[in-house]
Length: 91
Image (cartoon, rainbow, N blue to C red; front, top):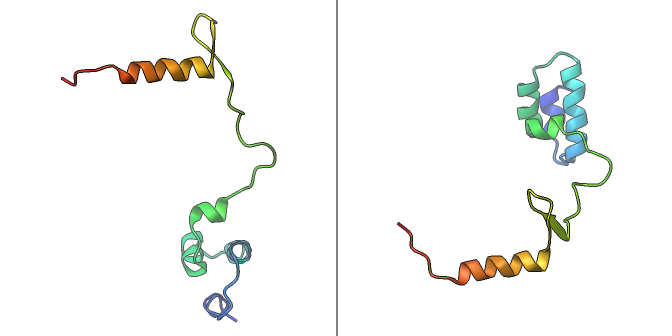
């Protein structure tokens, strides 16, 4: 069965299966761009590697300025609200 025939079946494979199918045909020498078009996945999906572990840093409740002084989140929110409540001129 050709690549095109295997991909045009009524029960389309899920994304992971599509990626595995693409890797198989690319491994056999087919061009990546052609295979991805036929399989119907993007390049980012094909090259995606899941990361294991925590995602990013947790938000800090204390913020430090350039001199090392600490400010709480609540204090900063109030300061921003006060600044935004004032009239300002847009030149």
